[in-house]
Image (cartoon, rainbow, N blue to C red):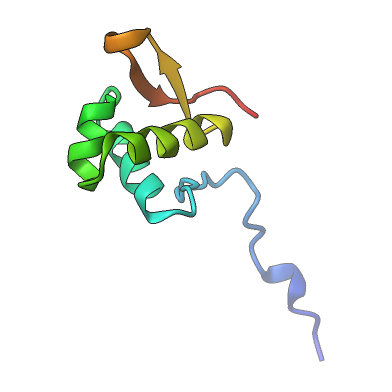
Length: 88
């Protein structure tokens, strides 16, 4: 019987990976998708997007920064959260 394993194409031969990694949490996924489609997101925009209060929104955003999904730009009222392009 011929060995057919050599005829199976190697998926790592330069084919781009089109599946972008996403956070596990559904709320984090919503924020990440929004940030990917827009320049960034503010706390107020995230609150409106998720329909949750400010304190919970900030907890989610801080967790996303800690996990390397987002990075924070600006300070105080001009803070915006953008997609983290740095590798972990």
